[in-house]
Length: 310
Image 1 (tube, one colour):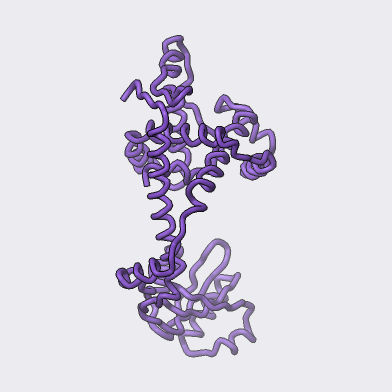
Image 2 (spheres, one colour):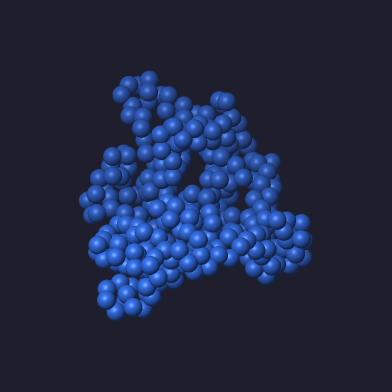
């Protein structure tokens, strides 16, 4: 898993932030210090720092503060090895003359630009990191080359046989239980006072059809699974209801929601047919990682690699 985690970042690159602004000749020297040689190319301390900042940037979308730093620090030990492997993949892609369409690079740049309010904001953000558009295009192009090579050399050759899926299911049935499911009627209103009235009337036993003739609201059906990562205010409400019970109005953004629990379906064992897509994906990813590790080991055996700093 650790060997290929950098490949999970393919096509999501925005920029490589540089937090170390060289103010002295010593600082420049420190960043340019060679820490590894991979065939005829070098890896510098700055390459390592940039990559670490890139990882921090990616995980900052999910983690913050102490949790983010703990995650980043846990990955530092293997960072140089991952850079070396990236360099080997890119070198092999160039040797094999792997094609990379410039239109795909442009499309990725356009996708990134959509995150910004304007072209000017995009260019300014790049400038803050000491980059220009050409730097970003070059990095994305390299990532695509590596992805294409791995696709050709490894991923396209990974196959999962039907009997492997069947065997995994038989040995791991306990992992394929459908969680408890709740079937609900959802009533959506715009006005708080009306929402309270409708909720109260429903609890008294008034039919939904009768209320629909008096008040403006829309209805829908909702299927909620335990542990489905619902919004907290919905999960706290839905999973406290008994069959037939109606909730108080729950405000979500600018609307009010009332939930009526129609039925509870208990946990169920998924059949092989229901579980096979999930099993196929898991086994494929597992085998893909194993084959990628073997392929990278072969590349390393055929290459000159010297680490100058631990």
